[in-house]
Image (cartoon, rainbow, N blue to C red; front, side, top):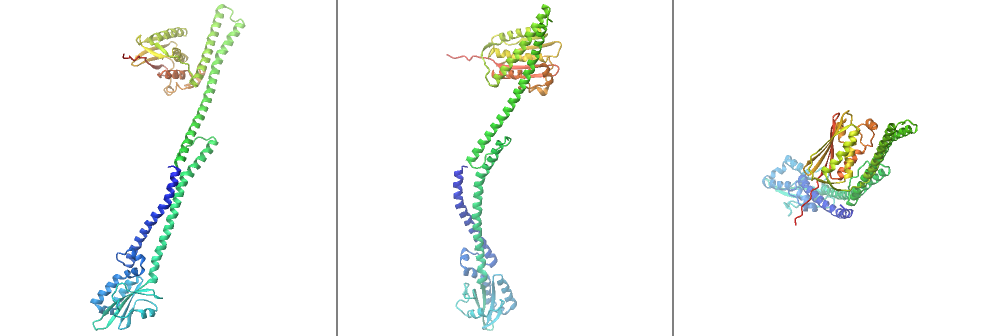
Length: 497
């Protein structure tokens, strides 16, 4: 939600919510008061008019008792001389802030109130008053503040009397006033809670995420990138948090890439330095032998020169590998793609490999199962680099007295599959999935003796993938390894004229 929208909503909420809740509370309190009046004062079906008309409420409080006295005056008037009956009526009235007075032949024979009631007794209406029997009663003001209801009766002996229900307004009306004060307090509480809620809503939507951004900024300033920022709050702040989190992730990735890059470069320099040192040492030794006259025969001289030439080639290969690695790292490999006839190309490769392997005492087996007309789109030079790197890796770890390497080319539907198999040391299962990773070494001690920069197979993977192919390997320790790679066939799409 946008900050502007949130502010507009807050404006209307701070106006409408208190009105709605106040109205609901007014209704609820009124309903509660009416129920309370009905329960406490015995008023049947009280209405809102009872709340605004105190006299009507005072009258309704004793309506049941008044009706009962009227029935008693009509049917059993002599019961007004029964003190036990009068006490029961007075007890019933006491819970309604009322009491009973009975007058017979001008004399008070029963008064249910305590204390001096002389002023009240003198103010009571006479028997036969025109309002006698009226449920509305008469209100006595001044210091009395009471509502009086009168029921006249005549005993069997002809004596006239009156029963009075006196309800104190002084004790009853404050109950209603107290409820009104409580209602006002609740309205103030509603306004406070509404304002507090809106303040917290705005605070959580703006201030809280800003504080998180402040903490995140401090973390980045201190170089700590291992945290997350969740987008929350108003839309503007949430978008800012999301952008900040994306920036943090990129910074972290860049930092991790830089650390890995520095590590890879250090390892590469270490590997190349080690691998260059070996042939340089050999070259220096043979040159010194020539200079000292150790090669005193044509045969020895020829052997020394050939060894120097071989070591120089090793150095050249390492330098080329390093140069190629730098091109891989910047995605600037110079490919020259063209149509290559698979059979002719691999026949030539096998012929070159055969001469090289023969000089090293390794047997080459070549098997081509592809038709003469099968063509692929590839860079001939880079594909030769792939084959040489794989074969070179096989030779490096050949540990059999009679080694062999088999080169098989197969037709597998839309692809041609090349398999290069050796009977070398093999690769452990735990290392097999990582051999194409840059600088990965299965055995550091073995590699240090065998040499190698650790990027040969990663170069193979890069070239094959850039050709749209795939490379993988299977191996068994002490039995041998098979390297596979596939290339898609070139198929011309016929054009309908």
